[in-house]
Image 1 (cartoon, rainbow, N blue to C red):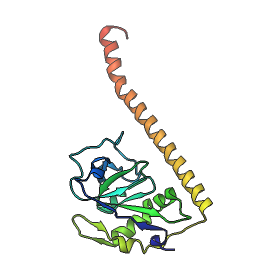
Image 2 (image 1 turned 135 degrees about the vertical axis):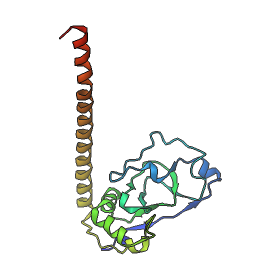
Image 3 (image 1 turned 180 degrees about the vertical axis):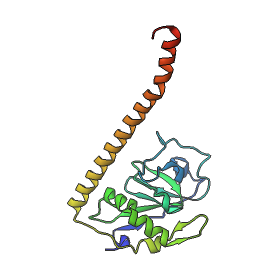
Image 4 (image 1 turned 45 degrees about the vertical axis):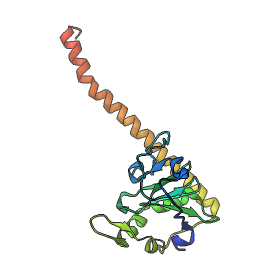
Length: 189
């Protein structure tokens, strides 16, 4: 099955000066973490200084795919309504396609490589969406998609928890020499 058979590009343009645009938070590529898809704006504040050019509308039904510099692998699952740069393509999964599973398909190394092969531009490469949507992909039945997506989500949460624990240990280790020096100079050692 082809990627374009399981999702559609939903490029609904919104005028940046419209009332609708001004009431929606803006997402740029800089707001999406590479490889994980984590959205890096906390409370989705509306910033009138951002997104002054044409933007696309999105909601929690979409998967946002970063077509600019596809090697950065920016694929996000928003849980709110907003608007985004036209370098993020809102994709709507078809019936019997799990949104989380679609996001995992888009983040796969095979998809990133396909996007880089079918790119335009060399200094600022962009995925050719028409070519990318021709990519052959595996599509298990919906219950299996849901199971796979849940398993991958849990594994990523475990990795994030391990990363945070390692950072906390590193911080404690880095503070240890200063604590030992204080004890040595105060005569406590």
